[in-house]
Length: 90
Image (tube, rainbow, N blue to C red; front, top):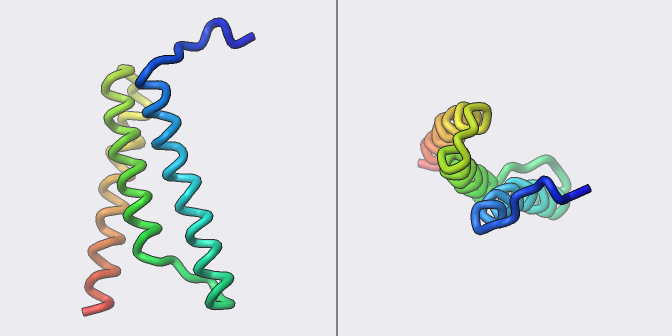
């Protein structure tokens, strides 16, 4: 069943990128539970941005146009959210 999958460094890289995306929701859930309301901490956006950059690199190595476009757009959106969050705190 899994014989057709490639398992190498880049597979681990892609899995780590997806782990960052999953981890950001765990962090967001933790902060929201602690505050007893929905909270999106800055670390959520930093993890999102790191995951998007890693996904973009993965897409470049694997020549995957779908992930390439997604990664590029995510980087723009997550960066913008970080700028907005920083302005709100200033």
